[in-house]
Image (cartoon, rainbow, N blue to C red; front, side):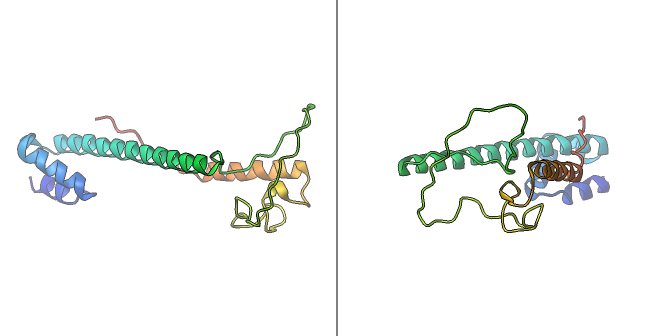
Length: 163
């Protein structure tokens, strides 16, 4: 019984602790003394809170994107979310020539800042795709290596707990 009490008191975040404590007090009194039942209760409530948090987080980001789109439409611009990494065009096959995009010289700096560590090839103050010294093959290889490093550094996902 003391073990269960200590487990409940040490729960984080506070909202989870309060919710589990009220459920033990009013609904599942047997969880006060049974560790297995308490564990199942904690896991289900933690998963519920996590699901709610993720749902709210997604809706918040959608709301922000919609607000940006509305603001840009009012300003006469169209909003297109940018991907995190720039893509290098792959060679091999003829592609129709595209007209050069119109650039407006408004005196503003470009939309994206240079990468934190500099260019992957020469450490210059520009993105790899704009590197004047790297060949297309070098660009492809450096991007592939960067993506492999990134994928290897990602930790394993949380183990799934059946309750």
